[in-house]
Length: 222
Image (cartoon, rainbow, N blue to C red; front, side):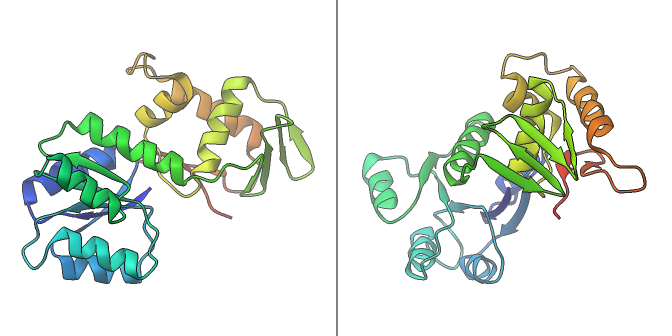
């Protein structure tokens, strides 16, 4: 996901940026309300993480401005104000979720994943980089050739294709395809990526699955 982080505290911004980057997300930071609104106007983001206390304004005003322009990007509020009244007020004003500071990174990452699932339209047929994947028929076709994939290969390819263009870390792929209890030190993701490439790659052409050094994998856009 491409995420806009609106946070003026360097320590928190660094902590969140590094953590979400390791999860395969791309994070851009704004430290003021003015900068946040400018970026949100000029760029496309999948999610906004919004602190309420900013040096030049209040996060509520940023949220109000976003919603007044019909900006539908999901917003997760991060705030030290944890009372029920504040939470209800922000949710009624258009926030999608609310996380009280201080928070554990694992909870932030889980809420980001949950918002991504809510915003992700589901389709039986996905077409990316010359590959057609049909979840109902359980078929994968590239060019005029139908591939025979195992159930795990199919699940991994589907997850990559539903997040086309996004860098997905090995840990994120492990949790999504093998489940949260799978041994985290395993190289099973790399092994299955090799399996997929052997079946999908065409001699003389770029592989549709790209390795991003030190970060993970992504499926190329057409």
